[in-house]
Image (cartoon, rainbow, N blue to C red; front, side, top):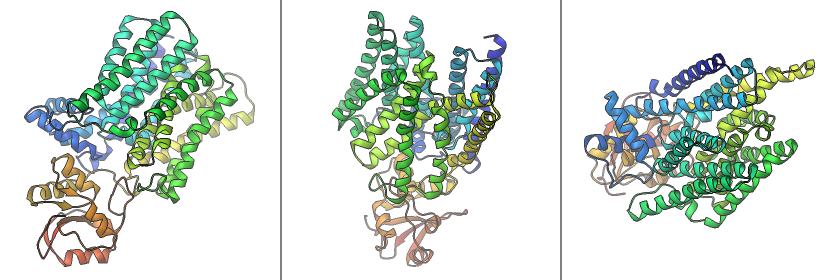
Length: 549
């Protein structure tokens, strides 16, 4: 391919980055604070790193990368970590669609597509992941998955190039990424190690030789040993490990799903396109069935049911999944297809592991997080299918032309309709999904001025716990009050929106209180603190005096 074609795709990637960044900066229109509560934890760790030293006494084993990165960025740009974390996350998240666009270019070039097709497919893949709501949400939030969603496909590409070229430079890069991942995040590292495992087996079984077995075995074995060894060492050193019981509690089941993954990807690449489509649609299509059932009864007891309006938006993702199934022959006819297949198969296997292990809130959170890693391959394949429909290489009938036009239209409509999901609370359907300054002020005031414990919802409690490193915030008395019991005996932070969209009790569903009952709470308590704005918060204490909850 000519340099002109490469420059054209580079221009597309640049525009994709600008659009993706702009969309991920939108939460700053409502608040300068992190759009997700995890961001407060990293802001606190980064603040202590900048002003004192790396807080080893409370940092998690898989929080080093984001903490140090945020501390460095906040120092360079001269902002407090709590206000630097959202633009920092937006910059990182905006790069993920660019990576997808680049992979589309690499795959299209391998398929010897024309310049026109290359330009269209790189644009479709990049803009789809820049815009579609769930990926926009996950790559616009300041937490570890934002970095993981960027680095996992890069690691997969680097490892793929290592096998294709046998170049020591690619081997060195692969080793560096493998070393870094456990410091990044437990779940992201798990997705990464399974992705590399699937990729290695696809390469080894395609080119079965002594050299490929040694190369693949060295890197996969080394990754698994480092992955498990690091977290064993971290635990023995007293470092906190997120999702620590998620995989350790069911080693046999995890091993079974790893075997299914390995056998599955090797079989999938060699089977007929009809079986490929059926397997792909069944594997991902069942997720939509779970979401629909979850509207009526939570699949994971004690967790949030799917809000009907949000569910309608999620169902729209069936369209790109169906379109992606039409491009699956790519995984068989191209070397890069092994990369695409590995990137979608690993999160699918991990999602089903979590679904079959235990129906606990921890596994619910893992499912929500891990399924997002499959989006890149799904939308990459969908982009190729739409491009083939839009720019056929042979003369097609009017019926096929109409079908192609419909596919393109539905794909674009899906992106536009689901984009708002990036800015709404998925448990209540309310917007904006960010932390308002009034909420931060109320949480820090309560942490500073309340002696003993205080009660509130998930938002206020987590700000106090994660940012102020306080152990005095609790949610249990709030739940009891919302269910009709007397007000908490301790200080209590309530919010006006509890009477409409409800109090956030994640991972449980939100619960509301009547306006009359909330007004009665304020009338029969001593008001200590209140905020302004469209959604005021109130810190009250019992008139008989505050006790410990």
